Length: 334
Image (cartoon, rainbow, N blue to C red; front, side):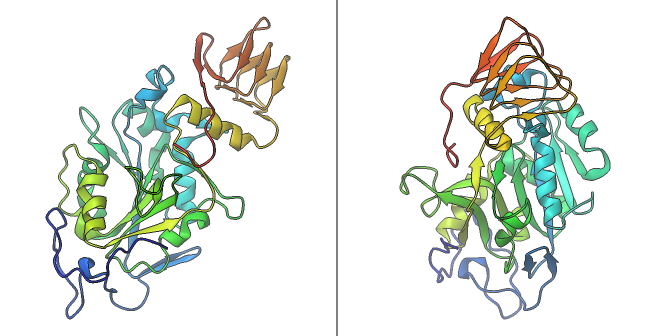
């Protein structure tokens, strides 16, 4: 674990609320420990405070258009599994399930997200435009209600060959005192590049104390400026390294790369697909029809590749939408 920058910061800077402290104990700016004993636990982790999970699924996915003109980014499939389901499965792997312990926010094409989640999680539907990562949590303050919160981006694809979803990020929660901010990260190619934290790039999950969530307004804002950077300045931000593969899936290249990683060394063809053509290292969704040739590509559920077509390094949706992926990113890049 890296990045608890300086253990002695007696004063919280502007933008990092002071908040209550345990009697006789140090606050977040000191990096002090909470009361002894675990208040919450799950597979591979124990924490000093109760924890809930929030999956951020309200975004528009502008860079994935035209794919996201018909489906919200959170429901775009990777390896024939919607990204949102992957995030919920990771929380379930940590022991966080059900509407009392897991929430999902929705906005853009929110009716699809609401119908897809159903009773699996508490739903927070944002009216108008998305509130951003900080505003989305501010809108959930009454539900979070004093707990620490594990926040996951629905569009984050993570895969660790040595651990299943959930236990692969358990170190983010294990031993948490309920005071510091923790980010899941991977070493950056350039440790000094803008957007890095202690030489790491953020890879989709963060852990936030209630004292920094309770004052977030339900208006547009992002966690980087509202919480993470102030905590970093106060010496109260830790980076927990993630050993596996990460893609943010926000661009066609990263989205395709995540799908190809999910397919492994071969192809992933849903049993409900009809394939009479040739498929090379591709993902073919349920109800899709492939009569032509598909190479390093994703064919969405119900989509069609005609006999006279060669689809390569692209995503096909329906019968007429083809999104070129361009450069395929390396694992861990964004």
